[in-house]
Length: 85
Image (cartoon, rainbow, N blue to C red; front, side):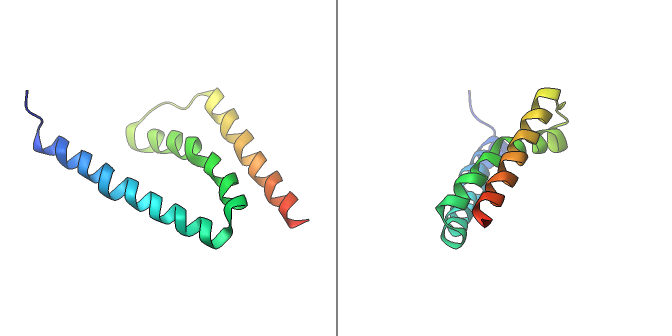
């Protein structure tokens, strides 16, 4: 069974552009803000994943996902407040 050219294009896009760009931008953010701030914001990955799945794929958001996102956002806010003091 042969893969379609569209499938290879999707793999190339995810592997070369999305993943590479994300890695480069993450490294830039760590250099600018420092590893302690970057460590807080890595927790946003599941929030963005759920939000993009909802926006782009039409996935349903559950109450558990909303509660988890709220807890993550609360922890980020508390972490930022702690760093300010």
